[in-house]
Image (cartoon, rainbow, N blue to C red; front, side, top):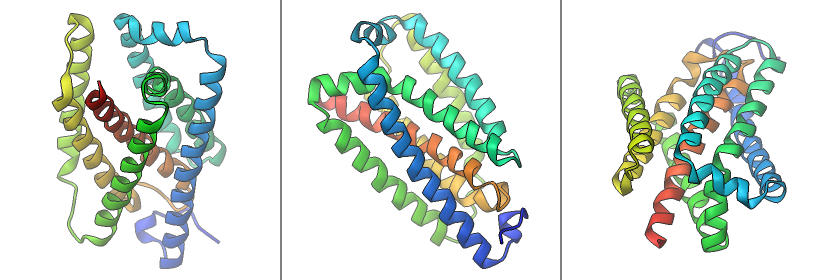
Length: 228
């Protein structure tokens, strides 16, 4: 039976079980996201979806709500309560589905879903490769934390400025965000054992899921810009 000790201090069999459950929950979260997104695309009127990306100040509100919800979801992910962890994961999945709605809609309209499949394939391949590096490398990736924090604040500032002043951040910003998301996945994966107890695999999956979706967003944005 798994105990609630820190993963780094757990037995090998407990560590293996923790990682197995974490990545199973990541996969289930992705499937749930796909399901919720499909439902939203069916029930949300196209006019309302169009309004989401047509009004830049609406996006400022959405980003603000998203940031607040992200903070709450992160707090819930570190809870010792399984029900709280699951609530945080489910809440975040729903939030991501809403945020992605206009981007997925545009991709469906202009490419029939082909570009979405390509972006998803690239995202999964990159996530698998980064995870392999994190598990097999003996390097300490703690130095990435400050880079990620600073990069995150800079990116939020640029996004807000772009929406207020109406300028396009362009392809290189998306490339930079792909690099930032990849660094986040590498750091989070390498630090799972130091951040979570063996009974917090749901919360750990939430953290990885959030970074995967950030990576997917900007890979999809890059692929769509190449088609436009």
